[in-house]
Image 1: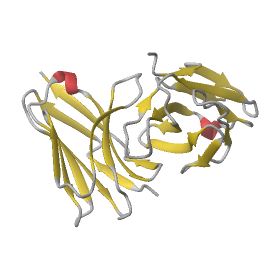
Image 2: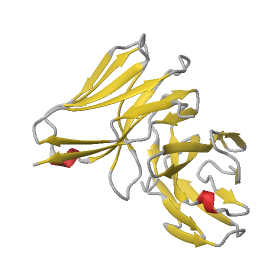
Image 3: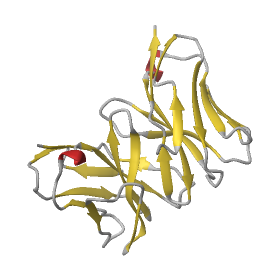
Image 4: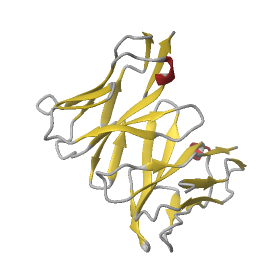
Length: 110
Length: 113
């Protein structure tokens, strides 16, 4: 059973466009929601994270929007660049137990 | 700092064989994790450790064992390899508990035939 559901599976965006990846969860005990970026052949790297008492967090071109009542959160990448082409994973955690989404492969076309 | 290192990078095992995946971190992190990554399935937590001598199960622990005798090392043991254990394995570490950044190693690609 997938604790965190992520969509879309793949995404193609033009350079300069906005990339949006969505995640949903059921367990209201989750208390930390990170997003990880992974390039081919590499391990994931933390991109940005949010706690459930905050509705939005922005770091540069990356923004997490968090809707606690809907149990959904999303990653927005503004002014998408070819260098953003990677796989993105959302995750949710309770204590030291982490649950990852299935990933979104993002391709940014020049 | 090398960060999190994993060995080997690649390995092919026969069904029933055993092996240990090595993980070392030089950041003096107390928390360490083992994940497996299967195509289209994201990462699944196998085991984690909150410090030397303390380990606990994650979401998919069956078929694996771990130990943590030092802060730096967190090896993952496969006793009787099965085709279902074909995957990419990632080790990670973090300075504090779940709400802190995890630093991942480069991964070990394991194939069981």
